[in-house]
Image 1 (cartoon, rainbow, N blue to C red):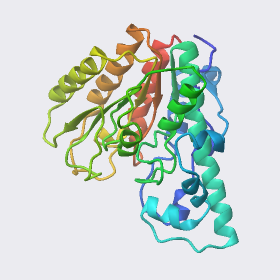
Image 2: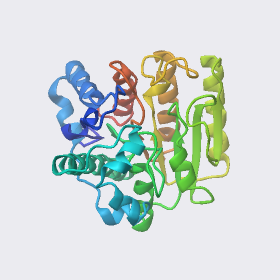
Image 3: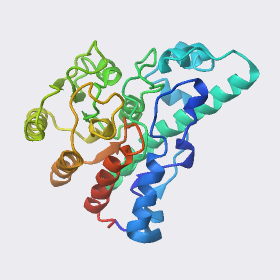
Image 4: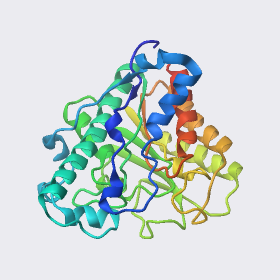
Length: 316
């Protein structure tokens, strides 16, 4: 697959969320850091691997999200609730800011759709961002404005490109929005591996939940993950796998260190390679999305996953 696009990214993924008043140390530069490290390792050859997305269209968002909710995102109150901040003053400058940030979220959502389409064509792809698994159909949650995962599934189903989709979410936090959206939908299997103790404190019901206790060992984590994947595949035949990676399970990529379990970089590598390899060997297309990751070292976990995906895609 040398020379074919495998990765989706745009420099506009680096949204200035601090202007909303949040103090959270989002790793907004992680996609750029991953690409910079790949350039250091392999030279400028990675330019052939990367393609830019287009913003998802509103009619595509409406396959998942309510019209009332989508309209509410042009006003400060909805953003304040999603980010846990005081609402910005509703003036011309702030409305302009929200329109720009809204477009950037639509761009990242479009990136997930574009990456999924690449995966269906070539077998593997990744969007170097997004994974907004906390967004519900009618409201946002946990810093997630739009559920790019659900939008991607519904767009691909609506045009007949896929029938059944397996979502494997290994972010530290349960993908509550995704699980709720697809609750009772036999065409989508949600496998969610998340902190038992951590937020969200009210968990939704996924098709298969694997709550991870704070004191788990890396060996037990991997054993549970392998068993969960085997169980998911025992009665479900996906046309596409969406791997919601999550660097916030990494000990140096967490939002609130000590809140729940954490994994060393070596176990993150084993986790991500196990998931990618499982579906390469089964010849089932897989798209990877970044999801959670915080602080200056979150990119390390993303980098090694992207590197392995490129290797299995035949790009390196």
